[in-house]
Amino acid sequence: MSLNLFIKELKSNLKGSIILSLSVALYIAFSLSIYSVMSNNLAKVSDLYSTIPESMRVAFNFNPNKWNNILGFYVTYFVYYVPIIAGCYSIILGTKLLSKEEQNKTTEFLLSRPISREQIVTSKLLSLIVHVLVINLFAFLVALFSCGIVSDWDFSIQSLIILHTYGFLMCVFFGVLGFFITVLMKRAKAIIGIGIGIVLGTYLFDMMIRISDRVQFLLYLTPFKYLDLNILSEDYGFEAWRLLFFLGASGILILFSYMFYRKKDVFI
Image 1 (cartoon, helix red, strand yellow):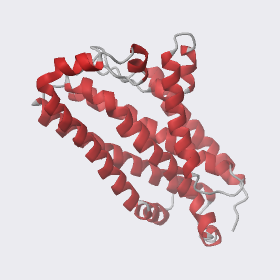
Image 2 (cartoon, rainbow, N blue to C red):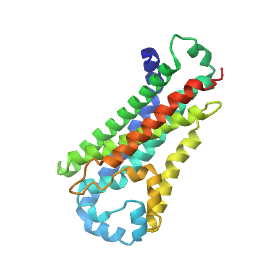
Image 3 (cartoon, rainbow, N blue to C red):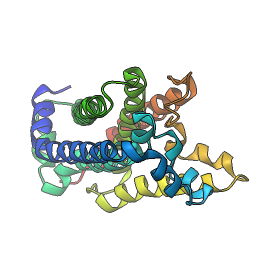
Image 4 (tube, rainbow, N blue to C red):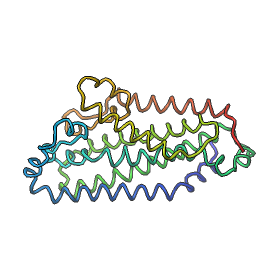
C-alpha cells in the first residue's frame, strides 16, 4: 500500500462522504422524530396502513403491527437509509476511485511513481472501505441515540448493531462491485448512472420477486436477500450463509480486480 496515495484519496473524497453522512443522519433523525409523534396513536396508524394490500406490505417490508417496538419501525425504513442511499454512494465512489486518473489524464504521473499497480489498487480499496465504514458508523450512532431518545432506551442495542453490520457489508459489496466494473472497462470512467441503476435495479427486482410465491428462489440472485431485516425475532443474529455471501462475493470481486488491473491497458 502507498500511504501517500491512501491519504490523498481519503482527502479528495472527504466532502462527498461528509455530505452523504449528514444526509443519512438527517433522514434517520427526521423519521424517528415522526415516530415519536405517532407513538401515542399507533393503533389508529396500524388500522390505516392495514388497508394496504399484503403483497405490497411484504414487498416494502412494511409491518405497522410491529411498530410498538422502535426497532420494528426503524427497520421498515432502514433499507432506504443505508443499503440504498449509502449503497448508491458506495458504488459510485468505487467507480470514481479507479477511474479518476484516466478521466483527469493524470495516469502517467501516477504510474511514474515508485509504486506498483497492486499498491495502487490496495490504497484505493482501503480508502473506499474507510469511507464506507465511517458513513455507516455515523449512521449507526445517529440511529442508536435517536432510538434511545424516542424509546427511553427500551430496545435491543445488539440487534441494532447486527442490522447495521449487515448494512455496512452490503455497502462494501456495492463499493467493490463498482471498483470491479471500472477495472473491466476499456477506458475507465465514473459510471454514476449505471452505479445507481445497479443498486436500485437489484432492490426493485428483489421487491417484485417478494410479491410472487412461485419464484422466491430468484431472491438469492439479489444482495438484498442476504440482508436480514427480521430484527424483532428472538433469535436475531448473524447467520453464516448471509455473512458468507457478503464476505465471499466481496473477496472474489477484490481478487479479480487485482488480477485484471495488473493486465489492464491504462490510457494516459
